Length: 240
Image (cartoon, rainbow, N blue to C red; front, side):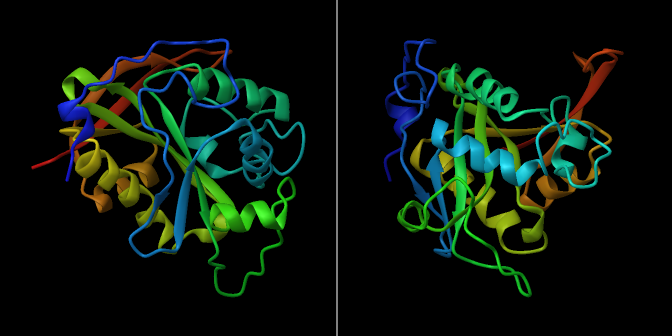
């Protein structure tokens, strides 16, 4: 199988004025991915996906309190979010995803419904568009901090609808992206970072096969107003 990044390292030209998708800036080929089990479709993130992702991860406008039980617990494990408004979340996606050539985000779609749960259509999408994309939008996953010249990237921004906890989604979505990164793009190394307090994230990484390599102390500045030093655990997986 061709390993694209190994044979043809990309040289993207940033175009920060284009902020509705990864088009024209990402170093990655923008192609949909399908999980081996066939129950997940991953499509490159676009501006049209943002309202749906926001509605899944935030219970209502102005849900900017990490202690709100309805806010997605993902935000409790990192230094950003939740976001008070859809506009705030949109600006975050544009800045962290669409304006960076080393990032590609994928929206997770599935037709599978967890046992005992009947899911209504996503409020910002038509039934036709959901079917075309491979089912209901349930979450997000990304590759970031990519260094094509050294065949290194990071798996992150991973979250999905809490109603899918304990299902195949938690393994199938990352495994699909990892297969693409190693087998099709030819990366040698994929990293996973999480704060030491984020036990669930580290546990998920280990289950996928990532190996703990150490803790970077005072890795970054935390959120306002206290802006405390944040340590970061490093885990990684290599192609051997």
